[in-house]
Amino acid sequence: MPDDARLRGKASLAGVSIERGAGGETHQKATGAGSRLTTQQGVVVADDQNTLRAALRNVDEALARGVAEGLGLDKFPRALPAAREPITNLPPSAALSILRNGPQSFAGRKLGVLVSDGVELAVLDALTAAAAIAQVKVEILAARVGGVLTSDGERLAADQMLAGAPSVLYDAVAVLVSAEGVVELAGSPAARDFVADAYAHAKFVGYVEAATALFTAAGIEADQGFVRLTKRGSSAQGFLQRCGDLRYWERTGTS
Image (cartoon, rainbow, N blue to C red):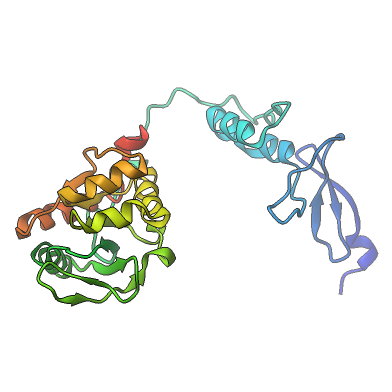
């Protein structure tokens, strides 16, 4: 067994002061006085300026500045000295781009379908049939776990209650509502958050015309990442094909 006394003490890594704990674990020391970066529970984490100094500025200057701004750093830390002059004029590599080399398939993904009373069953059936062929899992969400009454008067059970199933749980969403049913959803914070979050996360959104009232209430406007759904199977197939890109990156200014 190693000597406990030898494990404890001070060390230095990349010019940053390191202290060893009783078990030999390392603790980075903050430099200077002032506030400390903590978790939401108030637990102090490694010195934020040294973290940036030891990594991000050597990786990407713009990324480091964005993180520093987000952390509210008063002083922008120095980059570590490079062993050789960095090469900064290399052209972007399409082969290394995650965005340009996506899966091009939505198989194995999850689609959350928000419905209301009066939902047109033919549209939903077309979407679920296309999803089955594309190997996409569909979950039906409603304001109440008991589900909704369709336009044909049938009871449609819900897989999830809307208040407990935010859109972050799904790879894409669809909003199939009626003109009457959307009124209740437009007044629901959970429903507004559902579509607003999907929009903010650049997800594809399938919808019927009546859903625009919910989008307006949520303060969002349909763009090219929104796909109109009808009872024709081709519209559902086209929507799921678009979902193969996983995100509508143009909404975020990244493409």
